Image 1 (cartoon, rainbow, N blue to C red):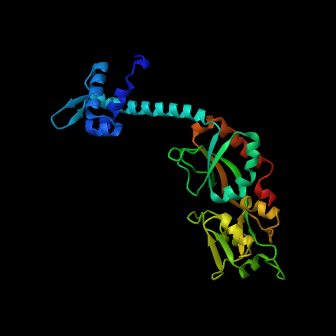
Image 2 (cartoon, rainbow, N blue to C red):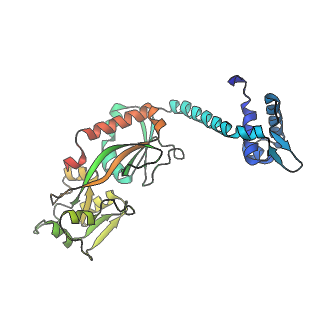
Image 3 (tube, one colour):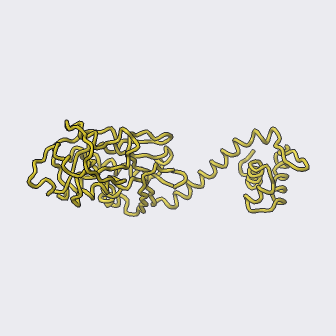
Length: 305
């Protein structure tokens, strides 16, 4: 049977009627009249030479042949939608939608994004800063950068940037006081709660133990839900923050923050490029990922800090 002869409108009417088991509800779904649905179904039955429904006074019942066709029909419509998306995508090929955590967006990606425009001057980058893992279909996202352990079911992931953690503070925080690991307990500890639900995520207890300091109780604390806000609080002299190297890098280079101790602790968490397998076919996604690789290949943030 030639594809060009397939009655797509009638197939759509059958799909809706089979899903709702009602011509009326199918009509509402497709914004047509029940009579139009009935006519489409009859024309499809004539085209196929088989009955699709057994009609009773009060209900519809799918025939065996119709029941068997539903799965392939659903897959067929999904493939059609995918084809339309590809065509639409080619029209708006200069748009790149990126999902990224707020801290990484403000402290790492945005300061460097001009470099991507040198590669793609025509690019329109739409950054969605969120702590949630992207729903690539519902949110129409092309690529994400996520902080975690790299476990993203059903998605491709590539390690982008591995970090260390270390305390940072304003340059005058330890004026007149010896800057030793134990001395952090004399100051307010600034906490990043963005990954607090994951016990393997970096935290003050982890760093203090690595530095040989027993985590005490009763130390003044200030909590934020993003690492970037914790860093800003440290810049403002509100206490000592436990920084991630990629997030604090620019503030350290600019002299807004110092690293008073040499103890930097490697962590299992890293930043990952995450995307659905089919997205890598898009040239703009390829260019963006290649640019990210180039930005991190000259030396990881953990080595610079």
